[in-house]
Length: 362
Image (cartoon, rainbow, N blue to C red; front, top):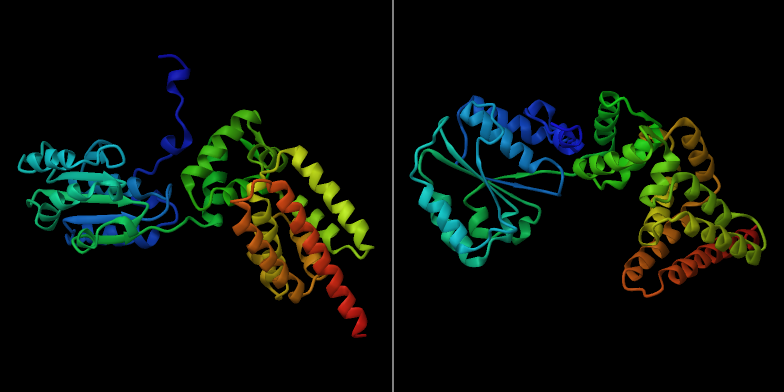
């Protein structure tokens, strides 16, 4: 077999084979383990939650545990995104009376179940409520709100949650060690923050960055390749916004710096979101003792803390309101750059007007 054919993406290579190795869903894995050990297993499950957090992985582990087998294909899987007709469901119903070839159960995993047509859902209802004793259904969805209430009422529901940054970081560090990849902690933090709580997304970014960087993942490479507004850029642009200078100079210097960031390839769609997140961090840091909750290196923690002391609560709250309004508008904007530039000017004017008020109240 050629070397190329052996390559596996990290999401598959490091997919958990046991509940103990599932990341960030202990509230679910502990309950499922107890259900199995106490022989109180439901006949129909619904696993719901964001993408890439372990729904299908847990369904496969549950199937293997229930049948006491180690094979990966111990259940029948259907992707409802592409097999969503009433005929697809009728095909499953026809097979329900067949006894299992191995193990105790025939287990059906139906992914993205919310994509089933209305008629397919209706055909499914009766068998979902009273399946044969040797049949178990595990449904999975990213959009629980689109699943019919009559289906929800027939299932034992498990709500998966986003994986927090701390757990994503642990997973990335572990895989870096196994893959002999050199890394900066702040680089992995950027990957984790950019994955929106999805381990699959984090590992997808990791694979791409590992290849690009020749197994040496730095913060600078991650920020550039993912188009992220890195913390050093957030710190710098905030310094320019709050600088005690003539307002025209502040505006010029800030817009020139923004031009520099555009040339670096930052993602304009996410720019204001990153600025807002930075302001939010500064707001949190104004409370003593909160610095411990940040995963940055000591250098950036110190810079963040120092900057938080330069701005007032009032400025940060009003700045966040400006950013929120811009974020809602920018998605529909034909000229995102101009929209961002106007927002930066508004933030500078806000800082200037608040300094004027402070001066007048002396």
